[in-house]
Image 1 (cartoon, rainbow, N blue to C red):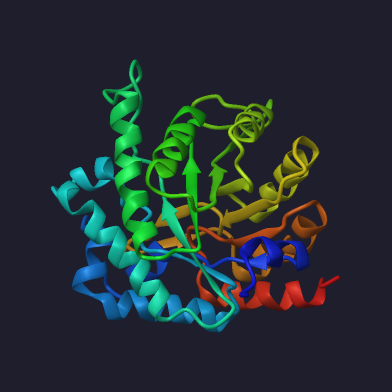
Image 2: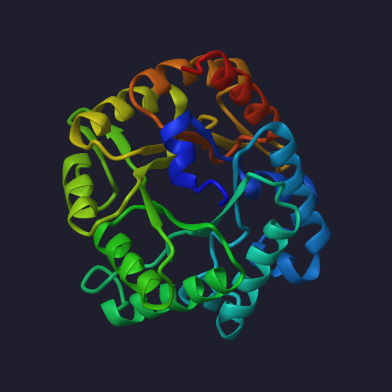
Length: 296
């Protein structure tokens, strides 16, 4: 019987991949286009990105489906192709998955707000995620990763939607900002509140990703570890993005500074680590070396 992701988590620190959007841009992805459309238009490039992360040492790659919910796809007029684009995302990653590695179905935020802050109803939100999960599950992902969530209410509706069509494990990561009072989502959700709500809903793995650099994540991991015994995922940004005069996006944290905080992150309780915006296979390669050095 093949090893499950939970077996691997118990064994050692698990390495996820880095930024997908960052790599798509490197392959001349057009500004303002839908990243998920490349699952059908440029499948070889998507596969090439997955391969580069597996080659760098990733145990898990995330599907190119971050914005694959019906709500998010509607902004490109592609909501009717939700199932197809997510199915294809899962199939592409699985086509290049080596033996003993894993594929996570990425489910990012809708970018909209629930009533009364926005126009979405709870039913609409749940259904948007349900259709996405259905496609990812049909494409045989190993687990779902509901990620970059800024509203615990949306995260829980995504979870409900995901469980409608799939009995796959669904992990959830929240996105926090750091302010003088501590770490909070943009909707004002505290770390302890998020962790408690996810625990109540039997989420097996939780964590945080995006927005913060690896230095800020070190302290956040410590706080999360004090709040939960569950395995914790951490995927930091490579600092803050800035637009250069020629229109290219650069990030404030270079690779040496970024990976310098990884050992402490692991020491503070991170069980699964990876990169978010601004990170690439070079970051992951260095993180793979650090995991080997820190192996119990």
